[in-house]
Length: 506
Image (cartoon, rainbow, N blue to C red; front, side, top):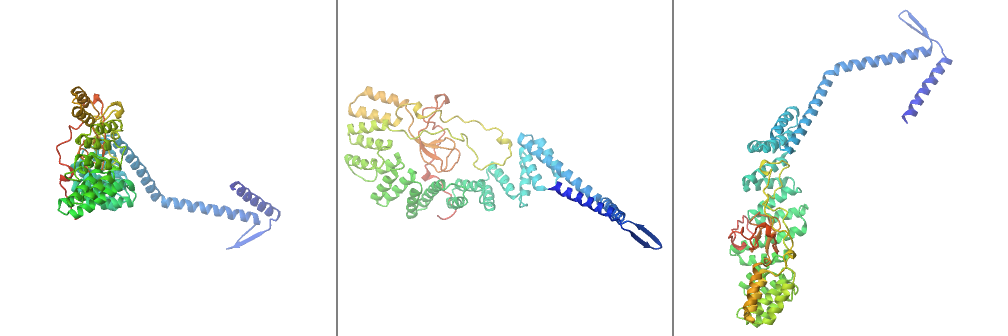
């Protein structure tokens, strides 16, 4: 199209030239005693040349007048390019872990750039990389005064507060960050994590509602978290002496987290205290369908006082019918049969328990060492340059170590001694128990920590709602004793006895 337009202009000029050549005409100009006579074509050409000359003069004049402004603009652009280059090199130095280089480029970028938000961030990163937490805190605090950097400043100060162990300040910063950007995952999860660690269960439940509303947490995960929180609220209500509210919350917890055996056992115990044995039994039977667990069987055994061993076996048969294929169903029936001296029945269920699947083996955790759940800034802090490697929790599934669990071996030894008095077979089962697969227990899916008691917070890494009923596994080369790796578990009270720091009325 541009070529066609040029050709049309040339054609028009040629046509005009031909026209004026064929019709030259005469033009006479008389002015102040001067007389000029010429043709029309020459007059038009002279007018065009004069116009071009005037335009060139005007252009030169404008360039001369605007040259200082043009020079300043060029100088600013040059400084801006140099400033961004220094900023880029400073970020690269931060990523490479070179604090001196990062500080040098940060100072250069601060001189060249008139954009404090960018230079503040680089300066804070450089100070943090160099281990100058005081300077980093000053830069992060300055960032709070600017709307465009407030969020980054909050994140930096939050990480500093967590490293210093100042959870109160960290919670205030997390609340401010979550209010500023409720859809940002790290802000909401940081606030939620701090609230559950401090036992602020009501506040944590409110934060969880907002997290689901803004799609920060999946609804299924949030539902289970709510079940755990409601269970903790029930324990808190019971500790305050409000048993009615504790029972209502326990029923809600069982509904929200049907796979949480401690919640169902807690509800059943509350119902038994209120002399509601039938409802307690129903609660355990309902929970047994999804979470067969020894704790439920233990509570179920106390539902009726003074019953005969045979009646107890019949009642446990009703419980086992809710989940007939479960290993725990056969173990519970075998225990009841042993107490009733029904040796054949006990042997039948023990053999079925031996053939049944173990609870899933605990996988090697994604975070084998305690970690800070609050995401860190993209600043390689000095203390995070190297993390010690923790011993692996497992090196293979249970099938790599075939055989029954410790509990089943001991029950078989008891049966052989009680039924036949066969000391050789009894000793054989006791020897197998020493080499057996460990019994299931609660394993943290975050760090691999183990506990015989369920906790809402892992005592090893403080992760929330990560305990699952699993069979622990390990390799002999790990150097762990055959105690299931429980050496680290301290003598801590069960969840019901943990201190509850509830700040708001449930």
